[in-house]
Amino acid sequence: MAERDVSPGNLPFHLGVGSVVLIIVVVFAIFLGLNSFFIVDQTEESVVLFLGKYSRTVGPGMNWKIPVLEKSFNVPTKIVQKEEFGFRTENAGVDSRYSDKEYPNESRMLTGDLNIIDVEWVIQYRIEDPKAWLFNVDDSVRTDEITMQRLDNRIKTIRDISQTVMNQLVGDRTIFDVIGSERTMIETKGQELMNELLVKYGLGAKIQQVQLQNIVPPLGTVQDAFEDVNIAQQDMNRLINEGQEEYNKVIPKANGERDQIIQQAEGYKAKRINEAEGDVARFKAMLEEYRKSPRVTKTRLYYEMLEEVFENEKDIDLIDESLSNFIPIKNLGTNNKNNVEGVQ
Image (tube, rainbow, N blue to C red):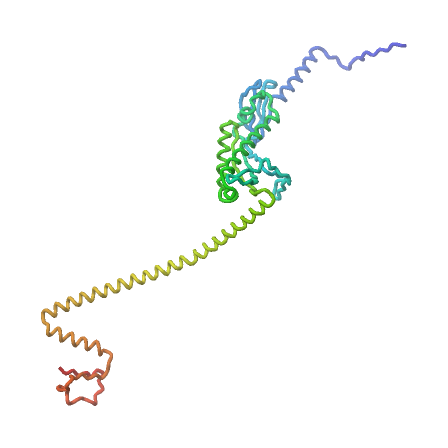
């Protein structure tokens, strides 16, 4: 067999040792440049580690780090995230679509009066301390191994805290309180207790809001019975509102009439008192005159009484019983309005 020369031919250019070193330096410089800068979004903060140990936290923008020796991990601290319990949203928006799948292990609870109820709720939370969020949970994992599984453990911790608190609050109340009057209280108290546990565990997150969604008994005859109870309660509230409305119309009117009658009575009272006081004053003055001259006062009173009695009468003749002093001559041709003669 013939031998062939398989050695490479001559290159079109000559690479010396210096050229090779220069190429290596340039490649290394490019590598350092690409790994020395990192970008943090406006909704994030970045935690920088130096040899696996926390170094600093930087804000949005382009930031610098030591290649190879430092690593950065962006954490969404400026956005509000949410977790759903008992249901899942498949398509959020104006016409949100929810999954038909049920999650009884999350929503099914026991109330204080030993009734079973399905409670669906949503929590909204925000990461406030990115360092605590990355390192204060799962200490068994090395600090330089920030994996997706490790981040999922934080979310699982938040969900466990939320479920624990919600079970506690529902378990302390009757089913009717959970469905009705205590709904807002559960949301407020739930947010408070969840944040206390998050602070205790140093998770670096804070619950912004707790919202209860559907609260219903389990499907079947139990739910049907409770729906009947809810309808009855709604009818009761409607009748109470109607009664209150009628009360608001009738009672103020009655109060106004009462006040009017009282004012009229007070006015009549004041009038009668003033008249009585005036009569008393006149009587005292008359009594004083009577004591000074009884005869004159008695005669004057007599005449005043006659004038008052016959004030509106016409053509009156006054005579005594025996007619002994009857005036024999009367002016019959006159047409006086007040032809009154008195005989004493």
